[in-house]
Amino acid sequence: MADRPILVTGGAGFIGSNLVDALLARGYSVRVLDNLSTGKRANLPDDERVELAVGDVADAACVRRAMSGCQAVVHLAAVASVQASVEDPIGTHQSNLIGTLNVCEAMRAEGVTRVLFASSAAVYGNNGEGEAIDESTPTAPLTPYAADKLASEHYLDFYRRQHGLEPAIFRFFNIYGPRQDPASPYSGVISIFTGRAQKGMPISVFGDGEQTRDFIYVGDLVEVLVQALEAPVVEQGVVNVGLNQATSLKQLLAAIGDVLGGLPAVSYQAPRSGDIRHSRANNARLLQRYRLPEPPTSMRAGLAKLLGR
Image (tube, rainbow, N blue to C red):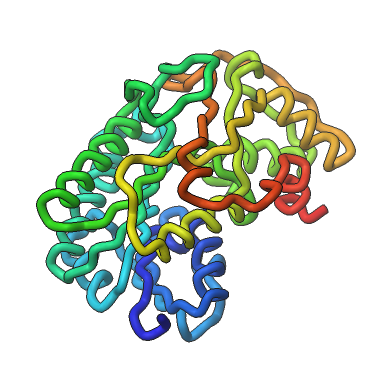
């Protein structure tokens, strides 16, 4: 397994670097393609089986070079920010859709077939409001970020039918855990809240705090991704990745306060454009195809790991 690496785009980032650790633990070698805009060299271990190629998925030649000799690819690289896509739709489009096309073309040219793709629950928009969203819920992207993720899914399916690619497409809900950078404008709400709480800085919530998300710990996600890489056959159809548990931002803040022994001041502001009110995954398909840790990492346990408590 170690002679032909797994390519992980965005592998120096939060999710990618946790995946790199898991792959190394299973005996793989890994090639990371990352432009280090949000990823960090320090997230990657000092291991001879890890090769870092600094470059952008928007650069087709760079992706082709990185793909050469690989046995499979996990495509995580993206500008993972709804707000950034609203403010700069063309710039984010280069990473979020053109980047996916570059990965597909490089796979076709280099004879690589297995690809795992990080899509997003954002493709559902506000459909399924208040209910668990399954994969048959109509898609209704509200932002350029969501539109690019959905378009990427369609392109991957085209390359499956036309060129024999084996895409495993995952619609991530809200992933959290170590190495999620609270200073990044693209960071998730948990890392932002915990980062400020640890420093005693006031916390701002966009909206009334009653909006809900389905949070899943990054270690649980990584277990699923490794299983998808090693599966003999990739079943068709997208897969939601979540725990089918709705947690409001107020409940999240209370849990952070419980772990830390208190919270700084919390204020509430107007909701942001494109933000979704409620999001919860029906994860029946996920549980049919893959194994989550039993039991899955609880919010309390995940926050404790994140905060080193």
